[in-house]
Image 1 (tube, rainbow, N blue to C red):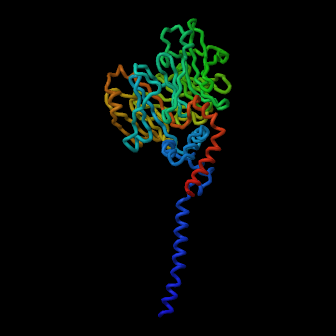
Image 2: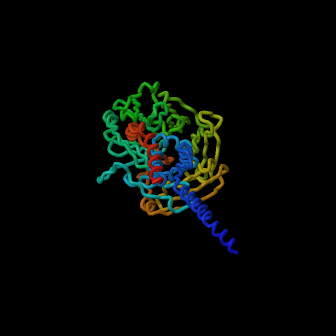
Image 3: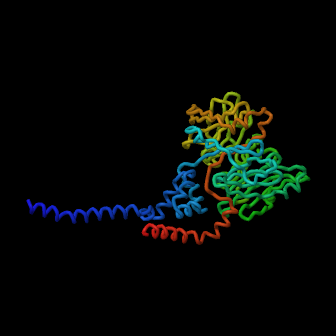
Amino acid sequence: MDKKKRKHKGNKPKQQSTMKKKQQQNENHKSKSIHDILPLELIHRILLRVPVKDLGRLKCVSKLWNTLISDPDFAKSHLHLSAAPTHVCLFIYDYSNAFSVDIEAVFHRHTAVKEVSLPFKMNTPFDFKVMCSCRGLVLLHRAPHFLIVWNPLIGSSKKVSYSHIVSRSRRKYFMFPDIACLYGFGYDALQDDYLVVVASQDKNDQEHFDCLSLRTNSWTNLDFALSKPLGTSNWQSRGFFLNGAIHWASFRFYSILIFDLKERSFSIISMPEQVMGYIFGTHLVLLGGCLALYSNDPKKTNIWVMKEYKVHSSWTFYQIPRGDVAPLCLSNGSDIVAQDSVLLPIDPYLRLAKYNVRGELLQHRISYDHHLAHVKARPISMSSRTSYIVYTESLVPVPSEIKDKDKKKKNGRQNQKNDVKQEKRTRSE
């Protein structure tokens, strides 16, 4: 019995030593950060697939993650690689107030509408209107003659004057977007520059074509691109950016006018034959990264989508059995999200519907919000006081901020290494 007791007592130090080792291993494992477990390159790849709305919270994880996510190059890559783009509709009402609607979230939760603070807003009332969007940036007009480029998600913005166009106009009160002949907003990948283009007429009815570079913050005259008169009054003013070019529609010519930002040249493609001689107005939109047209009959909405860019035979026809809807975007790659009676001013409800390619109703969502109540409790004659645009959220900063970040770019990778070293040092202590 004594031998057994002595043997049992002799095992105790060994057991205690083993337990201490396990505790030490557990503590060492706990002290390791994610950067000790996963290589930086893999963390970078994972973050590129995270939805843009979640990246803002992930910036708070560490200094390293904040540096990674704040890099302009990360923003560009995320724009192309993100698995689930977020489509948002921005509304400006009474020319000075704004709210945004997360289109997909409307079908899943009640917190899809939120108030937005407009940039460069003064205490005195200034007229704001939505003009265009490109890669997560929104182009606004602010009276009397300013253009504002703004990323609503990250809050960066830039204001530019177009007074030189006003000075040569025959109209005393030249303002966008009502009086401008054509305007558009796009991205020149070759120069890594965002461009605003404007077609207008001077006091002698001569057409002019101007281009604003946001990187150089300067206007350039592109009249040489006008080989012949555009007949600007025949085209819808708002342009849509796609595949390195800006597009305008004309239901008078049944054509789409294209301006290539790289080549600085115009071309025209024709609309589908079914549109020819159509008595109802046809509107240009972008659906799922494709050019699309829609027209409202009294009882149905006809939609044509160009599945392959500039391939006339790829026009595909869809029909929704309601005559008062406006297509906004695609959901899940094929379902059409549309708004019923765009901004009906008779009640405080936002009506969104989702249809499949056969025109069958999949979901119908009616959202109430106090912002909508303020907008819609007005007579029909006041509905022109509201403008809206659909854009895809991104982390892309405006070019004025890119310049500042370019200066720090050389130090960026070194900062990332320093952040990793610092975290390891802190944990070891």
